[in-house]
Length: 57
Image (cartoon, rainbow, N blue to C red):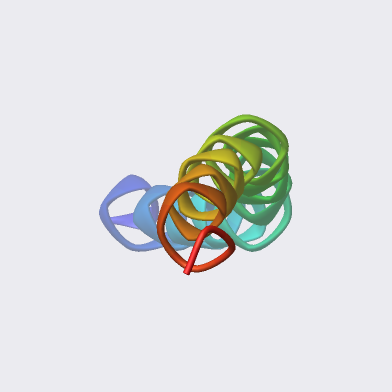
């Protein structure tokens, strides 16, 4: 009876702790990586488009 009550509680607490600390770190790293790669590409494309259309006009 102890095992059926206590162990799931410990597991739930541990998983919750992992979720609240590790996952945001992973997300932050991923978002940082996306920001440093994707956004400059989008910006470069947009600026290039502006340069080739607006400025000559």
